[in-house]
Image (cartoon, rainbow, N blue to C red; front, top):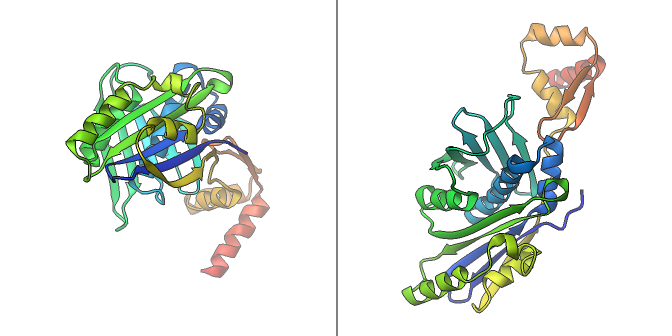
Length: 285
């Protein structure tokens, strides 16, 4: 799927601030279409996808970041942001019950550290708090990064008509004077929802608007799109992890119809294909 979605990284020339700005409209539309969701829950999933991109780019662009928005009953929205620009979302995987759009929630962030350990950050989200507020709390508590964040998703065709957000990260070189100047500047910006349909329609435009008046340099620009890592090989590999008697039953039965929960792709696995795949794995072992 082609997409005009991008994420941009900038830094002020004095080394005081770093900016991550992303527009994720087409990415969100792909995720919402695959999950057949819309309305308030779809907007929240779109914002969660944007938040996952911002966290990945802020902490380490080459890692995969998974974010979970969980209600009090444990039902959840899940967003995955991958290093190659692929992003996908899930609505309450494994459970058909609806996810609560309001009330208290938990925001969970998962990624793997360079030493192989799993980082898992968790913050409480009070009823009425938006995605930006929850994300700022996470960045301060779990990443020890003071950040100014805005995220918005606007309803429209395909569930959303515009989605995006930005993170302005405070760096050690910042002085009290420049912090005050940046805080005043951001406080005078239009709300994110207005920027997305005005001066911030693209990630580049959004970044320039957020850093307007501050001398800066662009560090990197990356494309974003909806996509999935599923494949027929992955499906068959998963099947072969089942108990041997279950696998044998499948080898003697009818073709299996398997649907990827994340992207909706349908796979038809015949017994012959599964047997050949298993034999190849045994031969290579």
